[in-house]
Amino acid sequence: MDKYAIEELAADIADDMGYDYFNLSPKMQAKIYKIALDEHSNMLADKADMMRKNEASGGMMRANYAMGSEKDIPEQEDIPMEEFDDIKKMLGVPMDQASGIKSLKNEMASMMQMKKNSWDW
Image (tube, rainbow, N blue to C red; front, side, top):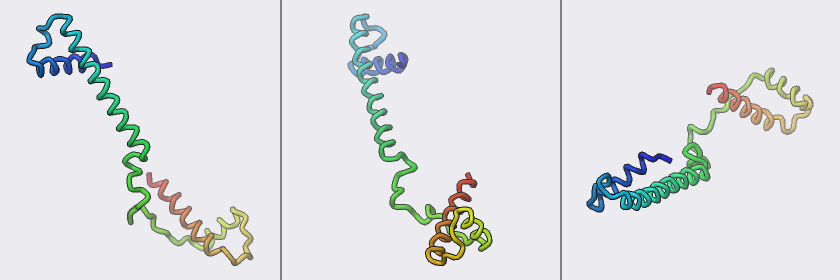
């Protein structure tokens, strides 16, 4: 708890009421301090709610993510056929199987691009 921030808030509240907080009786200071403490707690709770709402929506980085944009979509690059064959061997894809190879090649190109992008960080 920030005692000085609450005391400053209490001084502002007393000023709004037409009093000087530091010239008030201890009893009146305690009453105004309690009001300031409640107001400070409410402000902190509001701030926490805003932070939770921002996290629940994914934060700034996730805003409008589903909509995407041109710059969010990585460019696909062609990989050399030898590298593609090596990847197929690594994955255990039969070399004589023609069906589905093109889609696998596209998928692998995407994976390679994502891997490349992760190195750019």
